[in-house]
Image (cartoon, rainbow, N blue to C red; front, top):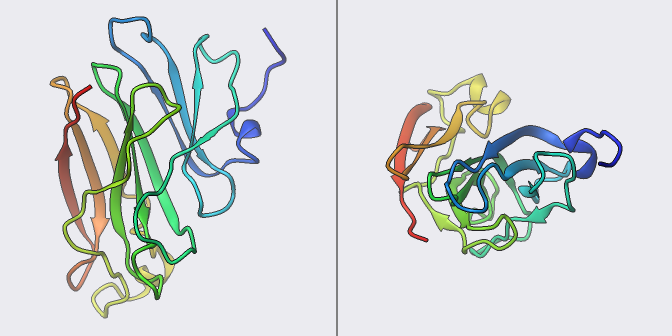
Length: 182
């Protein structure tokens, strides 16, 4: 075992809200630990995988962005969860499709090993554009919707997302269910 360290030490100081998930599957990846972090820019998220209960953490793997982008790498509010089949889901809010960088969508990518990921898939059906009179100061203070986002894996293997969305006149909570087969 190497020296003790903070997970965020591996991810360049780890800005934002990290997430941790444990593989509950019954195969050889059972109890694999995943950690998600940002490197201080809006280019994340990054995923790390520990196969020994968190004693060693290899270099973070960037979750690739395979969608149209304006080059600003505006991503935030990332989450991760691992389902009963050992499939890792990573979600994030992304402004890359908006040249003005004011509206965002929710995306998801999947991985069976924490090292390679599917292409990003858009989950939200419309962009969230928070600069509305109904949001008032909240749009300036919380342009990504605040801290109201989450991701969980259900007992049936489906992933459930929750986020604050402002496709209308004010922030409202939205949900979506996504499934993936291995």
